[in-house]
Image (cartoon, rainbow, N blue to C red):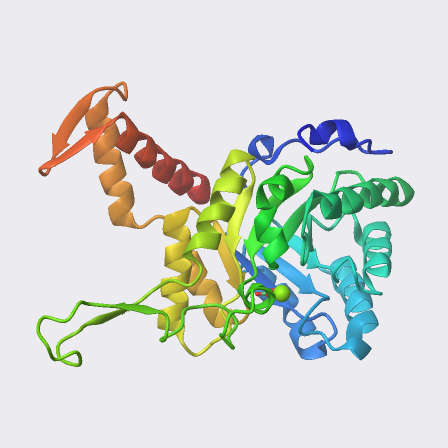
Length: 338
Ligand code: GLV
Ligand code: MG
């Protein structure tokens, strides 16, 4: 669908502005909690004060018999909590589940004005976004919701990856896309058994230096998600929406979590999911430009004057294109500081 605005005919609230026109909001981590878990729910006000986005999860990781409790728990928490500048998101159940219609109906009509973004799992094509789009317009009208809700798709099936460009451009409601490595691995029949991150078996090995094939051959672990992240980033950038890395399930392995988040940051993602409080600070650190990067970017931008031509700085050639990269860095640092 090349003209998504022509498709969307909201009943009450008008088409949302494209994300590029929406004021910047820090989005370095999407922190997941289970609203059916009373211990977790009690911590929501404290956690919300520390994160950019807090998300009530209704989908996977919530047991079938808890689906309703999770939905109603989120309504209750949202009604009694002041989230301040923190965004409140929900991950609803997938469109082929028996719960999603009730998720959307209840949440939009009950707490539509508190919610910022609806995360939709297992999106496989533009038609999934169009369905949610239409339904949201109807529910917003019914619930008198003042601002249009935005939609975030999880890229976690082989078909979804195949159609990522049309998903990214399917509606002006599209806020962004997250890579869901766990479901994607299953959908692709990858032979991993993890929730995100790398795998020691996925590596490259140096060529042998002699006849002995076992000696001195350094191995380097590769990034299993490079192709999909890069594809998702291109689709998002081309449609002015935001790309995110998803979950990293090995909570204890803070080193590999930071590596995975950093790879995503360097490739263009704006944030990642945090599944445990320990991952909040990792995301904050990784998805904020470092002091050194900001200093370097300032030096290049100052030296480049009007941004054209070329200069040498510490033996390295900088030109219009590296100046633009530095401006991306400086913009992000400024926006996060505001
Ligand atoms: C997230 O939902 C994933 O499947 O990785
Ligand atoms: Mg998933």
